[in-house]
Length: 434
Image (cartoon, rainbow, N blue to C red; front, side, top):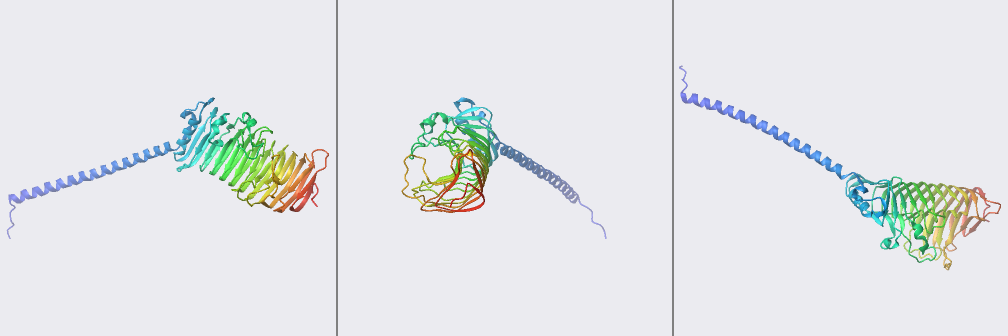
């Protein structure tokens, strides 16, 4: 069979096919390279986006120095706005952030560092300077406090700084030591409705009223706090608690003109330990039973502390004529040393510090399960142990366990019990009530 010869058209057609294949092969290679190039571009874009995002995150959390916001630190110029501006930046950032107050003397009018700070995991107020309060009481008309932290979570206040309330100028005008219905002077440092707060290594001196106040706080840890005011400074409680839970105060030195620590209404699960108290009025539960809004108090421990020259030591105080009935229970005072203390152990359910008091109705605060354990030392006055409970609601189970108190001189000391069901164990001196 004769083979068919290839025509010129077929040769041309084959040529076009070869050219076409080469063309599309080349196009395919170009397309591949284009796709690879696009992928590289996308990766670079993503990389730079991540880098920029990291930079944004890094700038969102950091340290905010009050000096960068205009603080003068000369002790005269009002630095309040600089402090608030630094706080605002820190509170609006994310992650861990810090407000830094360097060494120096700052003057502050009343300031409120308020939250919430929703994206902040931990806010450190690193306070190394000294802040001085205004002595002009007109500056405090719209507030009852000087430096306030409100609605903040995971706050740490530390750094060794000092809050100077300059109260010595205002104490002569204080109304509350003289009359029951009064307008209190402003407190120095307050924490309201905070959660998971740490206060460590700070000093408060000469507050106009209370030095440190906790209201509605949960999980508050205070340690290495120093508080100083003269023995005759009025109503200068060291640390006052209300409506708070999960509070520990430890390793602190408090000397003032009123209670070193006062545990008011509505508190629960509070531990006070390793406190050196004096001068002052001791560590008190109360006063309780004065107001209509009060809540129960429960699970309190005061332990491992020393009282030096205080008016009272371990004290519970409640008012007569209470407007409502409440309970204070599961209260323990344990391992306390008394050095020349006026009244080392005191329950007073007729408390009233004013000349004219109303006692027509016994206190309506029920005390239950109160323990005084391992308490020893020296006493200034005759009544070393006084358990004066309510006639309307006698104390239910007060335990005295291993109490050894001695007169600081040669006078006789005694135990006084009124409306109290007392259980004794271990050594008891002075002698038990009949």
